[in-house]
Structure formats: C-alpha cells, structure tokens
Image 1: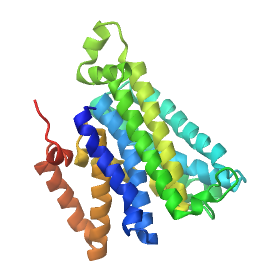
Image 2: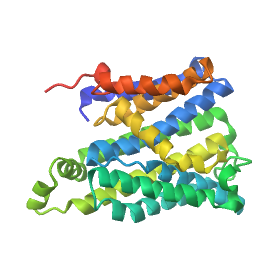
Image 3: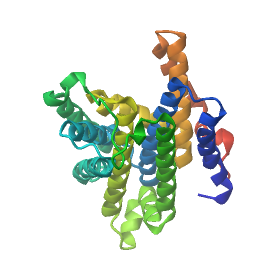
Image 4: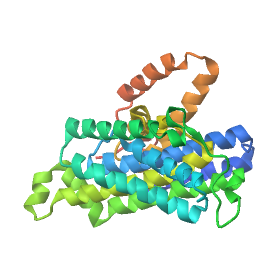
Length: 309
C-alpha cells in the first residue's frame, strides 16, 4: 500500500477506536460496532483473495462458521480458555480451507465460484446435522470464552478493543503479505498464470497458501463472532453470508483491502437503518445495493481516493 493511502484505513480504525469514548457506548451501539468490525475482518480476508489472487470465493463464510463452531463445541466439552480455543478455531478453519482449497484452486472463474459454493453448502448441512450442538436451531454460548482464567471478554469495552485490534492486525498482515514477494506472485498469477509459469514459478501452491491464510483469518473472525453474539447456528455458514461478504468487498472496492472495511461498515449500517424503518427493508436494500455497484464501478473507496493512472 502507498504511504499516501495509509491514512484512510488508519482513519477508519481510529474512528472505531474513539467511538466508545465519544458517546457511542450503549449496549446496542457496542454490539453493532463489534458486528461491523468482525464482518469487516472476514471481508478483508476475502478481499485478500479476490483482489490479491483473483479468487472470488462463495464459500468464505464456511471458514467463519467453522471457527465459530469450534468455540461452542469446545465450550460444550469444558474447554473455555481463549489460549486454547482461539488456536483451535484458527486451526479448524485453516484445515477446512486447505482441504477444500486443494481441490477448488485447481479450477478458475465460474468453476471456482461454484465449487467453493458447493463446499460451503456441504459445511452448512454438516453443521445443521450436529444435533448435539443444536442442529438447525443452533446453540447458545452461555458465557464468553475466558482469557487466561478471567472473564475479560465479558467487558463490552475490552471486547470492543479486542475486535478492533484483530481487525487492524488482519488488515496490516494482509497488506504486508500482498506487498511481499509472495503477494507479487499472487497478483502476477491473477493477471497471467501462464507468464508466471514461464519464469519457473507454479501459481498453485502460492494460491493455496493464500487461501489457507484467508481461511485462518476467517477462523479468528468466527471465534469473535461466536463470543459477540453468544449464539451460533448453521446460518453463519450459508452461501448468503458468503455472498454478503463478497458484496462488502465489491461495495468497498476490489483491490483495496481497506475498501473491504469501508464496505462492511456501510453495509451493516445501511442494513440496520433500513430494518428499523420498515419490516420490508430487504425490498429496498437489494435494489439499492445493485444500483450502488452499477454507479460506483471502483467501489466506495474510489469516492474517497480515486485511482490514478
């Protein structure tokens, strides 16, 4: 990322950091901001795939769901310490990404999208069949994960800044990866895989590693989402949620990681505001999103910082 653009994501993160201290500290507002930051984290990891590797996955929510289910399953078996639960959530989501990505990445274009959609739906129906953990109805997390034996995550302000820190870390890590040699190979393979092969590099392992990294970040987001809502159901793994994440990336601007943060914030705020206005908010929300994509070809980020050259 260019230094001149770094102030934009930093400004977004700073605004989220200041918000609780500026009067937005009510329970509803804190819950809403936590949801925005967690979904933004998942959107950034998906943007890493879409903008960096050209892999538009419609199964990314499955990694989110795998991470969330890791929390409730371990909680049901008496494992509640974040120092054990978080690595398990990351490991489970990364393993899912590795197993499914090993097959999906051998394809491209529409075939890749459909295969990731199929794997996502397989994960969805698997979660729905887990009768011991609520099945279709989902399951409740009766208390948030402990942190080194304390209930620190129960504190709304502390949890807010943990989510903010996780979002900042996700954005920074993905940005550094894309700026590295690894990221340059990913972008080159996105543009012309044959040319990358001609210089002696195989795109497949680079893409697979990128897919697993994105899945791992999705697992962290799932861990936080389970603790934020204290409830997990198969709906979290659905293709609709994957579609929402993909739309956040497109709305913010493909190719700009921080655009995914902006897209997620606007998406959640707009969804919440319309839901308060009318019970038929989806009739307005859908066409509004379509119009925004048609009119903002470069996403919302292009309004703030137009691309040059």
